[in-house]
Image 1 (cartoon, rainbow, N blue to C red):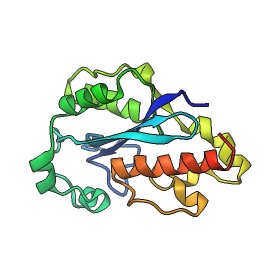
Image 2 (cartoon, helix red, strand yellow):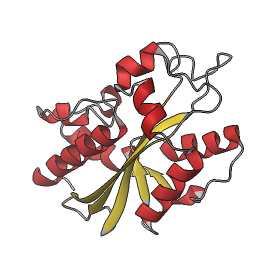
Image 3 (cartoon, rainbow, N blue to C red):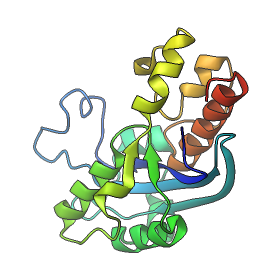
Image 4 (tube, rainbow, N blue to C red):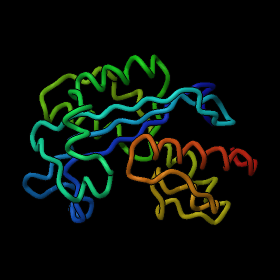
Length: 191
């Protein structure tokens, strides 16, 4: 189902609040500025994470993080100011980390990244065709286990198997949790 080596990706965006997802970021000032990129290099069907990548990227259009996003992600303004880099630098790091391997995410993180690049006026160093949504690949396998993929996110899918992991809504934690969920699918003989 998966290539011998691939990248799992997750992003966190700065402007989401309780209503952003419901309104699909259609309200004025609801920009999906990427503030965190998390990724893992994963080996084959067993879904063994080989290496990890994480970068904080400073939002430009709304540089101050909201209370909601700080509460949700645990990324503080102090941490962002001290460790955040530009989106261009973060994506260049992801490009180097991912080499030429396909990139999978639990959703359209590739589309979010490309839209974000357009929003802030930079060229994305990763071609759109490298990004894939993993959900259509694993949804049929989850249905066989009576698991509704729509009830979960990248950071919470492992709960469908009765497992616990790292705190969700952190891009790197979400990737780690998704790796665990994919391993569980493999263990159950579904991958």
